[in-house]
Length: 379
Image 1: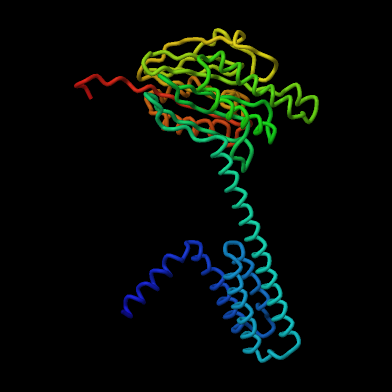
Image 2: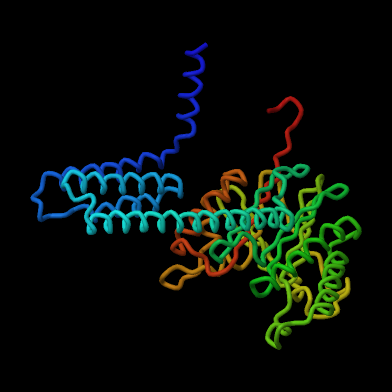
């Protein structure tokens, strides 16, 4: 029984020991070296004040508890040095010990403040992640005969969401997909993105075709603009959303597209990528009263085994250090045989490497692959 209890304690200590704790060897060795050198060096050389480095170094990678332990060891070492030199009760030695104790205490105090702020930042981040999951829910991997993957890259540091948006809805006999880009950045853009996503998730099931769906989304956005006052005249002129609506039937190898001022998608097939022509582009959503007659649905071929790549302008307007735009068509053609998840993985790494690791605008990409038809008796 005693062996079992000892084993459990050893296992607990092993699991609770983080890899970062190995760095504690540095301040401990530092205290030992300074103490030893101070004892053996001539009496006119004092290294004890250097012990303050130990708690200062510990605070850079540990919390207040272990920092306090190292600080206590440093104070103890300072007292031992004074005792060994026979000056423990002198005023100079007491001042050095007291100063070291005060500096160690201040270091622990600042560690406490840092940990409190870290916990607050973690709570804020968790709320932001929850908001992203509610606002921009990840698309399902499969919808009917389609395999789908999505990618979102925020331009602002520490940001998880922005003005780019996408959503998908399963309707009778097919799938509808929307990708859009809100003009502007910050909280106003997020508010419009949330409004448009909610409107699409409701209206996608209620309208028979894409032109009437686009008109319904435009009306929802116009009502939102009427209710929310702009900050200034520039914002009032630039309150619109570019959007691309797709409807992909299950049985027919076609796709219907309504473009509202948004970049046309790419069609990937057998080693090459081409831009799907948008024959009847419409203005962006939210710039005025638009009806179903103002929108047109273009039809193009979407065969089994092909893939569609939908994206926002943050992808094609990304520039390298020389000012050249990201060549999406050329780069996407390299991975036409890859499944959607792998395709986006390659594009993400290639895009970030092209721009030097930081985008100037939010970017969203959706890859949609139509599964080949499996005939009876064939794998």
